[in-house]
Image 1 (cartoon, one colour):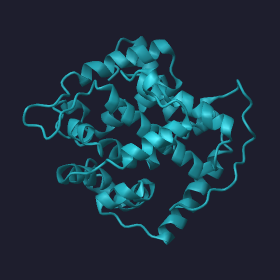
Image 2: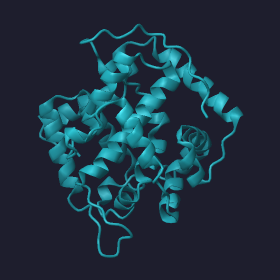
Image 3: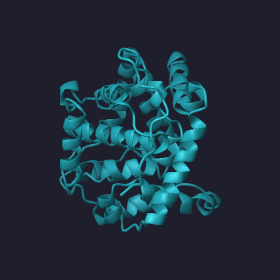
Image 4: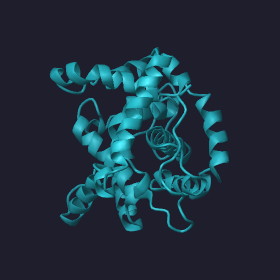
Length: 284
C-alpha cells in the first residue's frame, strides 16, 4: 500500500478552463516508462504482440533511442497535438503496426489494430500518469480529475479505439481497471524480456552499472502489487516511504517550474514531430 498523499497545493480548476499541460510531468517519462510497459504487456495478446514482433526498427532492445522517441512522440501528439496532427501520426503508426499480428504458432491471437487491446494500453497510460501525478503533487480536485480523465481518452482514440469504448467516467474506469488488472499474467518469456528492460540491457555497460539498480527500484515501486509479485520483485514499507519522499521532492520542484519546462521532454517531441512533418521526413 502506498503512503498517504499530501493535500493538493494547486487551486481548484474552474469549469471550462482545463489545461492538460498543467498536469503533465515530463519526469514521468523517466520514472514510469518501464512500469507502464510491464502493465501494458501483462495482457498476453499485447505482450506477445511486442515480444514476437518482426518490426526490428521498433524494438527497444535494438533501437532504444528510436523507440523512446516514437513512444514519447505518440504521447505528445495524443495529449497535446491538433486533430490534424493526431491523424497524421495515426497513419504513420498504422504503417508500422501492419505486420504485428499473430501467426499459427503464437501462444495467443493478437492484432495491433484490435481496439480492445488499444483500450487496455490507453488505460495503462492514463492510470500510470494519474498515479504518478498524485504521488508527486497530491490528488487533483474533482473538476481537474474529470477533465484529465476525459482528455486521456485521446490516448486510445488517436489510434483505432472508438471514443465510446472509453469508460464513461472515473468510477467506470476504476471498475474496468480492477477487472482487467486481475486477469493479467506474466509468462516466463515475457518476464525475461521485462527484466532486460528493467536492467537497461539495451544500453552500454557503463549506463547499466550506473542506473540499472535505481531504475529497478523505482519500477518495482510504481507497479501494482499484483504485477510486482508476478515479476518476483520485493518491496518494503521502508522502500515505499523512500519512494514517496523522492517523488514528493521532485513534484515540489516541478510545481515551481514554468509549464514549458515542466512538460519537457514531451513538448520537445511534439515540436520534433512538427518539424519532421514540415520537412517531409518519416514520423515513425
